[in-house]
Image (cartoon, rainbow, N blue to C red; front, side, top):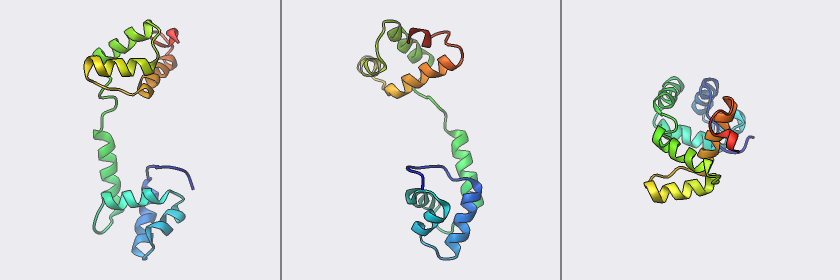
Length: 130
């Protein structure tokens, strides 16, 4: 069984539906689907009442479509991060300082992701500093 939370596919939601209707417990469903039991509990909590796998899948797709990525990494914030990177600051230092200066926090992991994404694109801006 994989560690941690993983999104369910439409096929796994369909299997969850069938196993749930046959009276299986969430724990036994998790074992059958080879996912962590918290995944099943969360899926059932997000879709209370009679579980409809198609409706649950449609909701999950819609939620994923609506949720924008990197809301905090605005162009202004990226410019501030890149200025600090040019000064050879670490992402941990940048994260802490910008939280105090701008009142907006972003994790050091997000800054590392920004660096690596730039590096993947050819390293034109940030990754050449690292």
